[in-house]
Length: 228
Ligand SMILES: [Zn+2]
Image 1 (cartoon, rainbow, N blue to C red):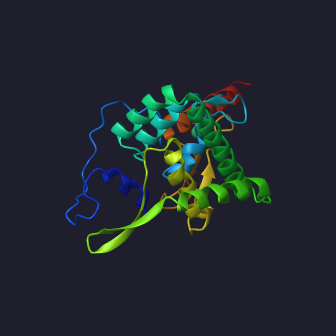
Image 2 (cartoon, rainbow, N blue to C red):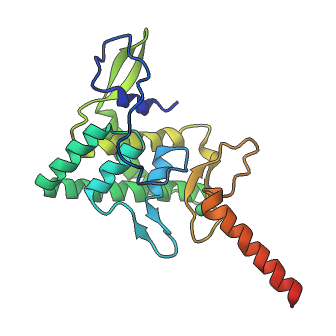
Image 3 (cartoon, rainbow, N blue to C red):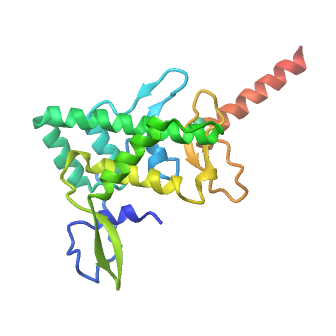
């Protein structure tokens, strides 16, 4: 139910009932590793190695727009326009960048607490609530194929990329999939993902990124033990 992806159809006549699932032609190689299966969790992962040696992957507003493009929240042309404007309206873009990081940390803190069966920090939940409410103010109903869908409007605002992220976090919190939110078993990684695997036993963010590394480590540990 990734309804926010429908925003990729922007630019076509929104009232037309013939809007098909037009595929976006990507012009740039993706910049972000999108392994989470949910955009708000992928967003959390933009602070890499969070608990060991945090590395910020959203250093500038341009990074934020590129994240929007990689995740399909923004069309490449929308991302380009926002990037260009971010060099002109620097203060506003910088402010939205800081909001974005605050929202990201709020989403992290809420899901981290739930995963670890701890009380959800009220400040984090309040922040997420405020952003989800603000996002809802930018939504409108659009007729599509004989029914209606929620779509976001005014995609030209710097913070428009944050609306679907806040909304997806709110939707996930209120969904049956909440218990499927996990962190990678690698203690140096702990990237978040939605475990939609058949048996719900997924341990790694990505097998090649962390799973194989852990396998190799176990192999060496066993060898060391055998030779001692
Ligand atoms: Zn990992």
